[in-house]
Length: 304
Image (cartoon, rainbow, N blue to C red; front, side, top):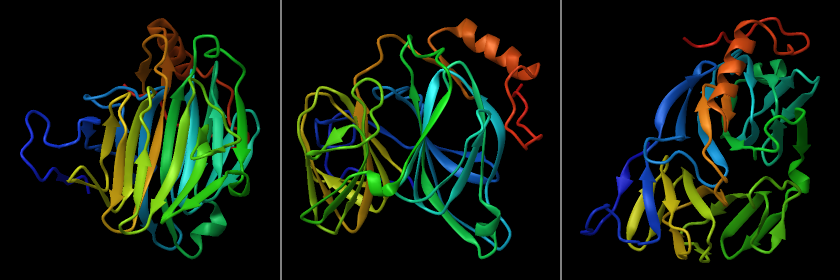
């Protein structure tokens, strides 16, 4: 994973299209006993619009009796967006929500001033083995929302519009795209879509002043003669249009939005416009001042 690149001589960046600003090859991290590819934040790019974090989970096949077990951990100053291609995750949090998420649905958790949650493979899904594949995204909140009350919304797959046209299937996750609108509207004119392309299908993307990215989740795609493989994040240049052609069956995440009004700091699971607020969150977690997840006593300690 994470290999690929241009096919022609290009000065300075290794690809032909002027519409591609940056190419990011994610690093690998471990969460809850399996590996993920972390595309954001990166040394090459910290944010795309309000998106400050992007993990590509799997595909990971668990043997009988196993699954993911992400113990309770805290967040501030962000919303988490979980979207699955396959498998199931049970979300539980400190405001009392217990919600399973399945492919095509969206879990949207707003941390605000502080929330704690766990993410685990349900017991019944461990009995026959499980293939887990999906993305988890963090979206930074505006300064007026960072200390809001925590909240949670679940959007079933049936309520997220599916747009189909000439070898393309696009499931809208957030915002308005391809002539349809999702029920989830995030900050800063946020857009997000799960796009599947048949072999040879072309996805034209109009010029857009928003910051945007394409994450290749499966397969490979071609842009202006250059080939980009699974596990790569393409940061698009605002104001430029381009066409994406699938070399074979391909799946990508298309997302973006307007940039934040000011910088956002990120440390572990905390996001804030204020470094001092992150330091306070560290102390609060270390000293047990976050509300617990009902029925769960284990937790992830504060990293050193």
